[in-house]
Image (cartoon, rainbow, N blue to C red):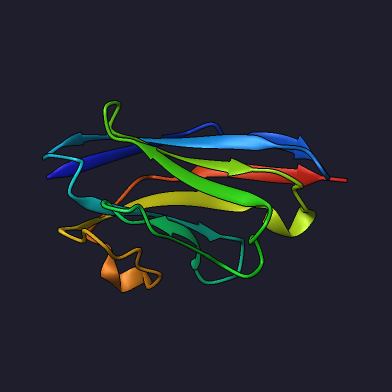
Length: 126
């Protein structure tokens, strides 16, 4: 089992920044690909960013490319999502997820992931 706990959400103004963290515990963290997804009210969960174990390789949704950066600290078993230039449409619950045994891939599909955190709310106000 793997436990994922997100933190760092909150209220930000348009153009502001937030950094989300996702701390993993349980099984060995370092062999997982990690991803961030988000879900706004009334919408389906959507891919935001992902990072492979080795490389690393990253993928981003077009809507966040150039504004968000995913990174990981293997020593701390933590993955981060630095969010800059926030927009009202970034408002959502953000979830981190782990995909077991993906070394060189940064998956973008929800059903690729094996473990999920509980989510952290991000609200961007104008």
